[in-house]
Amino acid sequence: MAIVLELSDGTTTIDLTDTTKYRVDEKRGGPQFPTPDANPTWGGNNQFRDGADLVDLIYPNRDIVIPLHILGATHDVLETNVQAVETLLGRGNAAQMQRHGAEVRLAYKLKNATNTYYYDILLGQLKRGRVETIVLHERNYFMGCNIVLICRPYAYGPISGSHENYLGNPSF
Image (cartoon, rainbow, N blue to C red; front, side):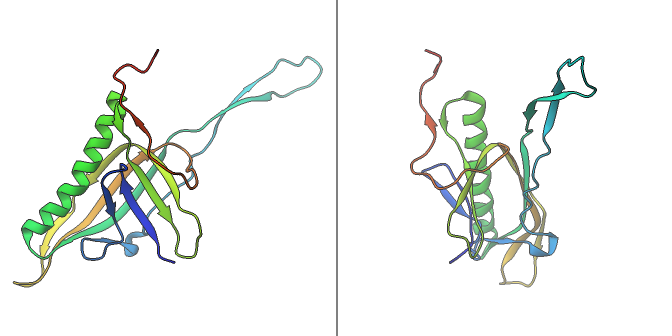
């Protein structure tokens, strides 16, 4: 089974494991999915003992960083690959702000896993690296790029369909 690392809004899908366009940079640690720390709320006023009771747990959003190189046979193809990522993330950002349209998700599956897991992206940015032209007539690269995503705290498992809201004011 293959690794899955994709950005998708249900219509457009960008496969970050497509080695003709993108190369995840394993030398910089590969995709980083740190678990968010829980923020506990303590309360209780028990007069017969010391201490407090756990009242609530709030989880902050998850920051995901995907270090990668963006490739292209020519500079025009390179810019097309960059624009594909920036456009998809931009549409997802707009959908989150307007609460209208298709949300962008990150699909992730390890090599030997059975299920693919999804993260809802709240904010996504492509931070470009530097342009490298190795030799004339060779590939062009954007080295040291990062896709920086702010997602909901936890992933969810296999789903069907997409999350969309086409109502301008869904508070009815």
